[in-house]
Image 1 (cartoon, rainbow, N blue to C red):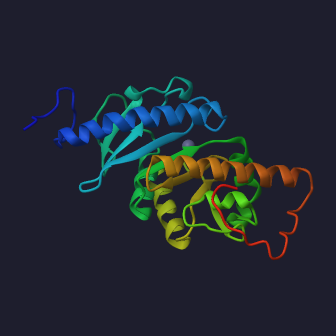
Image 2 (image 1 turned 45 degrees about the vertical axis):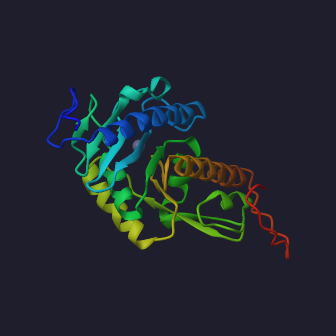
Image 3 (image 1 turned 135 degrees about the horizontal axis):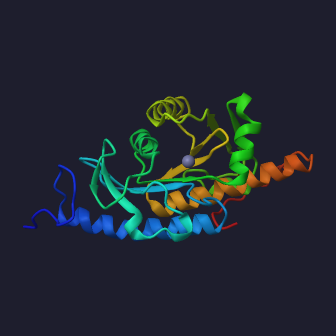
Length: 240
Ligand SMILES: [Zn+2]
């Protein structure tokens, strides 16, 4: 039997299996985080990324606060418990840990990714009065879990930003209850949150939603509206 691992802080003992899963996910989260930064979605210290390590009791690998995402490495990923208390790793977990935990609980997510792109920031302000924006009629929507047609309308709620992350996490819980089918949400003048059953799905959801936000933002800039979808074109497929 493995004893407590040297270097572990906190009250809970972590199994060797959970520790090994945490080390693997820390590497993957650092890689995804650097990719998000390199695509302009998590510049500077912005953005935070997490993945569930154990479900019962809950533990979450999450990026540390204040790390420049260009230099994000596995040692910047911390293991926390269901209250956001550190179980392993060094540094302080992201200030937005409470939001990640809220999403994991509400959606049974395996991974949560949060970006601060230019388009998410701009559109979260432009559509704030409406409480959200609808993404509809685009082929790219089929990249979202469970969406099989471009005729889907994806409502992306917009939540008012706050520095009190406990209160903000409560607002997130409320919004996720009100919009049980949404794949993500925006925080006003702040950024995008999305999630997935596992890290690969969450990463794909960032890519799909960031693409759609840019399309909506650019088409609004050009003063154009969405062209009508051709009638009777209901071919399906995941690779178009
Ligand atoms: Zn943020």
